[in-house]
Length: 497
Ligand SMILES: *Cc1c(COP(=O)(O)O)cnc(C)c1O
Image 1 (tube, protein in one colour):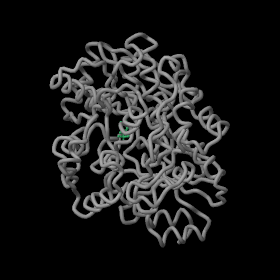
Image 2 (cartoon, protein in one colour):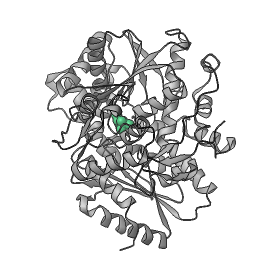
Image 3 (cartoon, helix red, strand yellow):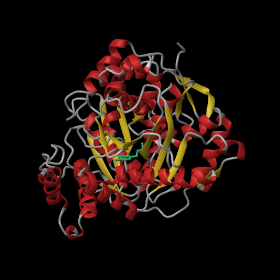
Image 4 (spheres, helix red, strand yellow):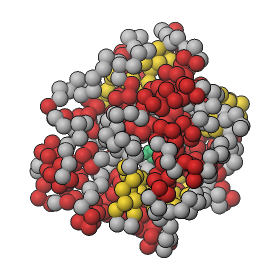
């Protein structure tokens, strides 16, 4: 087996083991860590069908994190994927009509971010121990709504760690916001930004590469890490459920082992779908990955034209976790198609930060395989929710609806008969008002929390603990700041000012 090590997308001189990549989050040159090579799966599909989620997770993750001992990795996995998930198989697959929905929202915060953020704290603590880090770790996180709560939940009261979350104050759903600002834990800090997700993400990235800040922090006994999907400690656990979905398809005899499937993935920062690409590189029989965007369709345009252009109006949509114009993880994909040409990546990323855009060369565009890009408008998203409910009595959230809608367009355009799994990234309870308003026009003025009760009736299920009585919880976090004040707020928290 090859020793998987990680290098920066932007230079060849930086290479580290996984523990260090997880701890750092981002490389010193601003690049993202990528595996030098993707390990090939040595176990046959047939032999994995009966594995439970935890066992499968171990098999998939061990080659990416091969500086972790078996005991260490199993400890992380077993503590992450336990009864904090309300489905005992962790990621159930539902057959609805002739498609399949992979429900990744059975964790404590009702979004797929729990799949990675329930394990990241354990990976990070283990990595810090292995590297003999004595400093306190400060997790800086920008969120478009779901990462924030999942990270807070995962890191709350974890010793030796502080977690600071920046979210767009006016760009998340009511339920998402309330989940974050009521978060308990003496090491948790939640700050609203008077700006959008890209502002928050850029602000965080700037602090990560602020040499003077890093030095002051070091003197005070702090180091940074990241809970964003730029951290490979989030990417690697996400590969697991692509395999798990496939194996469930085999188990229920929907497909034969070896048969190709598609995945339709609602995409924002390009983390989830990138994990799907890694699964394919490992040997999972995937035909196409369908990259579904909302009206912030930078990725759709990119796959169509080879031009990445973020200079456009930022739209606030009903799928706010995908309201993103700078999809950070695309850097890893571009790196893959340019055969890890670090100089080229550094050049493209410089163009992106200077001019807000870059363009691929013809031969680079020819390598844009494996991915089909599509987008859904707000209207189409609502229609998809209505259609699925009316036909099948099944309720999907707005993000999942974007990918279902794009999947339908894909079928119309390609006539592809390959069985397709829609990656279902959030519970409809998280976006109650948008979902319920899609189902009925008479609910415009009903408040989110009342709609939660109505939704439970339609779904004939109990309201999940995560939203039950959420409206009665006391707001603990009140700070709102501008993008330029983000650093100041950090210094206040760390009492360095
Ligand atoms: C984060 C998120 C997405 C987008 O995932 P990326 O990995 O950023 O592409 C989609 N849907 C939901 C509900 C999310 O929380």
